[in-house]
Length: 198
Image (cartoon, rainbow, N blue to C red):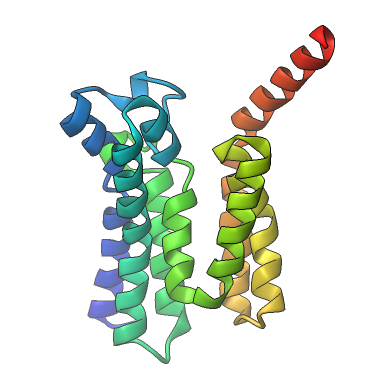
């Protein structure tokens, strides 16, 4: 890779690491979002702790962090999948382990969505439907996120995506599911309590 490609990959990490939810919560409510709700600086916690507008703004900002560097990589290096792949991976890593918050960050859902909106736009429509159906049926954003993460790599496979992009889909989805383990445990505890008292 040339110096521009290397710079773009490095920029992807730092852009992905911009703590959108933390900044928005500070500006809108004057709070450290890490000390409220779930403690996660992502869309869902900002939505619950700060409000609908702040949550949607965080969603848009986090998705843009993933989309923009990958889009630029595709524009400047249309024949080099490795550059766009690395930019996408670094944006996700930057969001989940951001240098700006002592390497703590969000779960990567919105940023990953932005990455694949640029890489595999045909898969994002079905993914959005799956997310909203799962969220609507369960009443939990986390269930929508986990369900979509579990299904998305197979959408990529069925769409005949390049193997490297499909591999990134499996890797990023696995990361999202891993980051949601605390949510899953909480949901299982809530279900157990309901069954106990039901």
